[in-house]
Image (tube, rainbow, N blue to C red; front, side, top):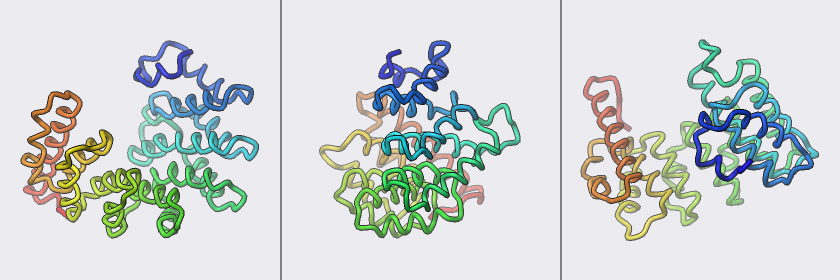
Length: 273
């Protein structure tokens, strides 16, 4: 099984039996850790997630005998299923990737792992990153504490989490000034998630730079739609003329989103920040 090749194929197009092979691999303690890491990442796709996959990943995340890096990967991999369930609910069991019982079990175990002083720091960070995608009451204090840390890895985790936990506009704006490219990227994503209008100058500076990291470029393009929807056509026009079809597609999606936001505001159903 070519694990690398699977990253380029939508999960619903995987050959028959691929999910089962990945599930067996991620649970095989004799397999190389790198392969188990990749299997866990691939199994994070909600189209192949189910209670069985979720249980396997949760067991790895909670197992003190497993490698901390693999435990962290497994914890993060559960985030997409938690977010889907949190947003869509459980009214249609056939559509939900996991049952409500499994959802609650994951969140309870994540709470315990995060607050257990015996849990390795790397695992605690990953548990926070996975669990915030379905916000809980304890997350606000956890994110605030992580951001206040002098450890850059914890700060990065905090800014990542701010995409889902509201009330951190000041911290997001502060992180937008970071010289750490990873923190800057996450701050741009967070500013876009909450439509923080004060982030507009930073986005314009990023998009006006002579050179820009590709991931940061796409994040900034998407953020423009919510941060400054009324100016999106002018700000994004230069990128609309580029030869890269992926960039052009990202711009068109952002412009469509901006138009939708403005339409809602005109109808009195939305409010800018």
